[in-house]
Image (cartoon, rainbow, N blue to C red; front, side, top):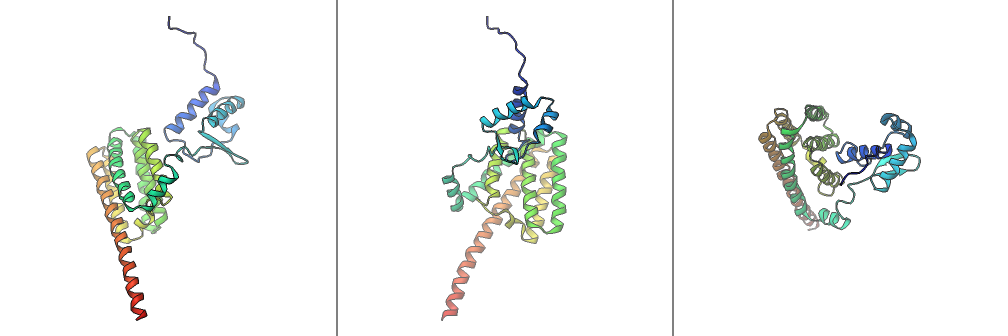
Length: 255
């Protein structure tokens, strides 16, 4: 008979499973510091030896890492999504930038469509709260803050889509974007008229999500990414034109 005795689950195993789920669902993020051992043991209602056993297992699995004198952190589980050689190719070839934008347009459009259908009320409140911060940042004319909130807004939508594979894949892509591998996000927020257009586009995405309109949310994301693509193409063209203009100017001075 295919039956076995039921044995109670070890406390350390329950702790391990809970922390694994928090990492899988993107609630605990790469680089995030865990509470102190005492505080975490109290929060989870387990003894410190049971907690230590769970942390040791998670470290062995590569999900947690310790830093001397600093504590326990969620490991950079996204760091190996792409090889260094491939990242170098992304950074040095223009076509990768526009392929990246096309990929984001497809994936984030799908994520917005899913979020409009599957997001909880709390998910939508979070997205709306970030959008409110974007409106406040727009008045301050701070490109760095606006670009960070832009990333937070799009990540909140991905989280609200409730697909953990999509979430971690896109989070790894945003890490490369944050590192300047594809392009500098701050460029998008340095021109007044463009900044207003970007805010209006994020408002349209937010409105469609709050209305739980899947088709409208996807269409708003598509329009936004089309604008990003055109803006970057225009920026690169302007840079190329300036290079030629400088060459002409230097040549004229030397005559």
